[in-house]
Amino acid sequence: MNDPRTFSDKFFLVIKGLFMGAANKVPGVSGGIVAFVGGFYEEFIYSLQKINGKAFKLLLNGRLKSFYRYVNGSFLSLLIFGMLVSYFSISKVLDYFLAQKELFVWAAFFGMILGSIYYIAKDFGHWNKKTISVGVLGLIIGVSISFLSPAKENDNLLFIFLCGMISVSGMALPGLSGSFILILLGNYVLLLVDSVNALYDTFTELAKGDFSFIENGERLNTLKILAVFTAGSAAGLVTLSHILNYVLKHYKHITTAMILGFITGSLGVVWPWKKTIYKTNEVGQAVLDSNGREIIANYERFFPNIEISETWWALFFVIVGISVLLGLDWYGKNRKQTS
Image (cartoon, rainbow, N blue to C red; front, side, top):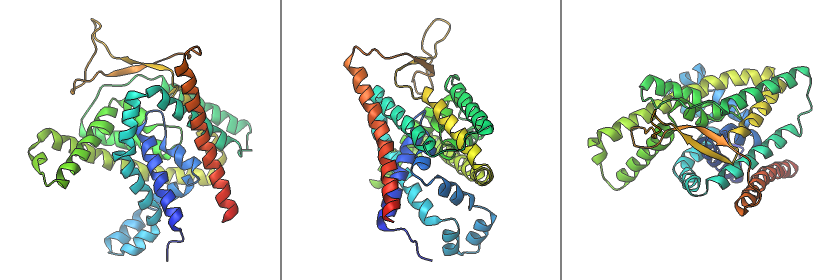
């Protein structure tokens, strides 16, 4: 069976993967929001749910084409390709702007989340006592998560595997930021900065014919950590997708209400006007990690000063973020009308 997707469909699927990868990298932003707003969330969960015993049986029997069709391989491969490219390109750009123009980046993402709340809520006409209660519960959980304090970095491989299983929830559950969960678990820098950079450096060296990393014990250990984290993420995503596929099929309205609550609660995490609070010891000195970086304790949020131009620029980027989501909504409606 041929893939019915046009070249344009495939191209935009890679672009959506780029955005999912970038969103997963930013604390407070969920890749699942991109999937939900992009209109491919249910297909994403359904495709992952097809990675089951039957799929592995097809694979072990050498029936690769049947396996590829069964797991919706065209969709998953294009989306995952976009995510991987994002981790080594868009994510690097995001890292730069978070360091140089942090306020404006957070403002843009704050606007995107506001836009996503509108996008999901505008067509949701199923509010009743049950969905309102679940929505409020999602809101409370989302807000509570944003005020938790991060733990200490831990490179135990079993814990790294669990980090992968837990953090991947941000890709499957819109509004629950996997990268922010990694901050709370104390392993954001280790798993999404150091490990990714180590892999990038290794690929760069291999492209030049340089195999010196084999003698670099620290690099090899970091790559091992990344491999375990990736395995945990894959296991968590497949496991969670089976649960979510059942929930979406039988409790779609309740699930949507919970997602709306989560996303609204996550606004506290991406509030642009905040100051990073670092951990200190008994004498007030900054506590450093194994790489000499200050460890984040939490964020101190404040209201902006409207008398300075920076605030107005930040508000402009909030509007830009909202416009991106409205643009996606317009694009989706246009495609339905022309197809």
